[in-house]
Amino acid sequence: MYEVTIKKSFSAAHVLKEIGGKCEDLHGHNFLVEVTVAGDALNGEELLIDFRDLKKWTYEILDHLDHKYLNEVEFFKDINPSSERVAKFIYDRLTKRIQTMNLGLMVSRVTVWESDNARVTYTA
Image 1 (cartoon, one colour):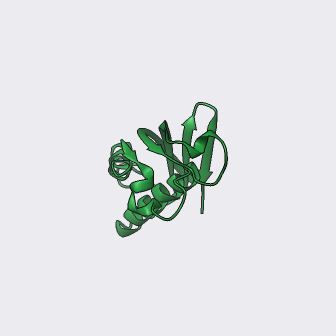
Image 2: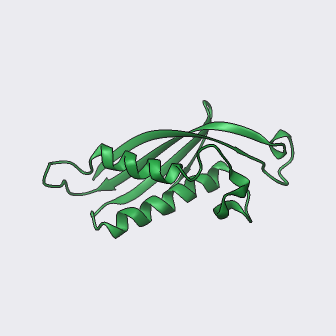
């Protein structure tokens, strides 16, 4: 099994409701996102996937979140826009993109860092 991982970042603000503490106040993060895709076979160029393609697709997804108030993004309207939910948002959209292209790949994990020492990872 091969894995390819890329990193991209975005900035956003959010309010986490009913969890107590300062996170219930409006605050923001410079999020760092790691996306890993996996597969068994290399393509004709001897790559699992071109880094440029994976970066582009991830950027297109993050563009929906970058410099946004996450509580107002449609996906998060009825749920807390926690880092856990951000990771799932990215995972679901990237999985859909890859599946429609029939590349024989799967998203193995999405990790979202909200600070230098706090991260979450979503896998299915």
